[in-house]
Picture 1 (cartoon, rainbow, N blue to C red):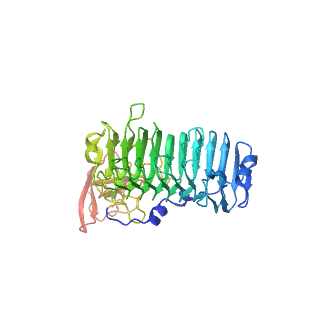
Picture 2 (spheres, helix red, strand yellow):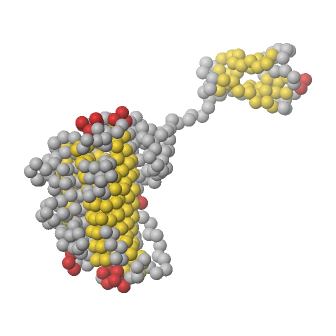
Picture 3 (cartoon, rainbow, N blue to C red):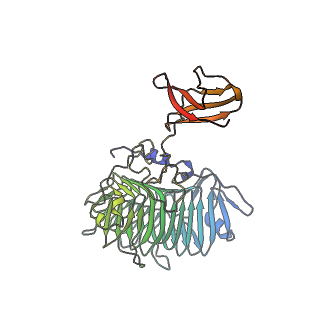
Length: 474
């Protein structure tokens, strides 16, 4: 590809709605939290089902036990008004959730930090912003930035620089996950459960241990889907001898997740394999993940396989992808190798995600039941489905039809006229009846029922006989 796609362009390309959404408005029963309020106290007195509205300003998460707001068997949603920021001040995680249902919407969450808290029941934590065990987490139109997990690599299981969900469900919509770091795996998100992710951006996240996944770690028989996504600049570093379980964007271990309509660019695996994806092991159902309609470009792996390293017998369900640099020997193990194109996806440098004219992504995708793209536009817009996150109208423009000058043939005794013109696009003459006398062409009209149509030829400026019609029984 050879293009310098800046962070600004990628962020700008997603549209403001993915970083911030319009505040949904206050409803009866909502609880307003001011920046100086103790969020744990606010949550404790809120009834289940409440929405806690964070007023504009910077709110600090509680630092007790480095758990942030600690929720057990609760059902609460935290929503930010425009300008609301929740920070961990690089001291604490923002939310710890055990069972129940938890949501965050329309806010910036930043500078969370966590290690292994030793929390029951699984003692399997991480998640600089959110750690959840056996819970449902819903995040909509939020920006997660500069979170990290700390602790010894591998031993503490410090997965998910921003979010770690264990034995639960993670629903992401319109979120940005950027500049987050995990000391074990899943620089942005760690998952052992179910995920439904739609229209999210994963940018410049990092994982520093063998299980990798600079942006995303899926393990432990995880399922679900990640669709309409953009990932750029994620990185994994393998510091463990003889351990190459990496993946610059994603490490998919023993999990069956569908990845569809993704644009995956400039990710790195340093010291290992799979600059974009590392796939190893089957889900307990016997199935591998699915990768479809994805565009890969400028990914790097120190040990090779810049786009995909697949450790398995196959077949891996992968089709309709454009991978600059190919997918190595995995090409012999995928379900549809004829639709894996080794080519530059030709993305517009103005935003880093939109295929340009001539891109092999245009119209080369397949319908997998997803009716909107990363920007919320309908799929398809033109001729077929695009490969990658963004749909464009790739149908050929329809120019205005070009006709000859209009001529009218008349027959005096019936005052019946024919309007005739030659259509240069179809190569045929067209005639429309008129029942009033307009004017007579300056050519002799034969007295018999054969009527000759004389039309003006625009290209060479000459009058030609372009049409003959047999007209009778007037």
